[in-house]
Image 1 (cartoon, helix red, strand yellow):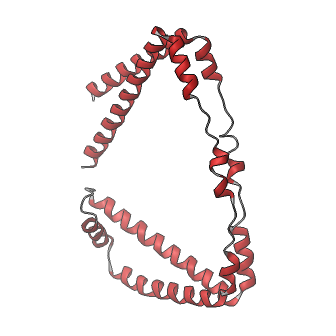
Image 2 (spheres, helix red, strand yellow):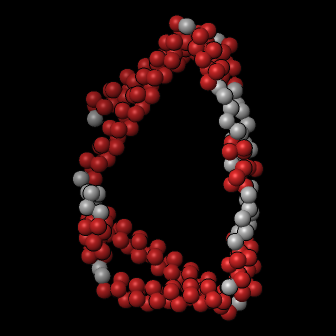
Image 3 (tube, helix red, strand yellow):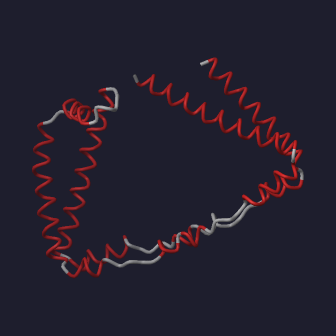
Amino acid sequence: MLREITGDIIYTIILVLLAANVVAAFIGVLLLAIPDRVTAWLQRADSRINMRRLTKPLDIMRDTDAVFFRYARLLGAIILAASAFILIRGGLLVAQVQASEGGRALARLFQGAQLPSNLWETLWVSFVIFMMLATVLALIVGTLMVFDVGLARKLSEVANRWLSTRRAMRPIDTPYQGLDQAIRAHPRLWGGIITAVALYVCGVLLWFSGAG
């Protein structure tokens, strides 16, 4: 079953690559036949999207810690009690369930996914480990909020250190038009190169799909 799924994925990838190279070959032929018109189309389509302007709303800091720490001990007690309950009851429940039984439960829950039994067991074990780690983390956070609000506030400040998304997007927002300028300067040359490379890749993909 896993081999069939892998084969379907590879076949889909080959189809996508074939379609992309057919489009590239078509563009290359257009560059050979009508270079002036294609370069004019490329000039019109080359409208720059300002990523820093799009991400500006994300760069506004919304501080929720003030509201959160106003009722720190109450919220900490709730988190502590809930995480302790989940850890104890969940631990007792998980201790009674074997990996094979948990895998079968996941397989019944997601009947549409046809996966091997050992993969379902791995997913079950990974889910249990993730939930236990998350519960232990919640238990630690709740304990700190109840017994040491100052330390919890300091850790929150470290964890919530502000990172500017606009500053991170600055390299992406820098236009690099070296290839576009080269195509506009020598459209027929690049049209021939694009067509030749696209046809070669199509031939390799067709040979690979036939050999497979």
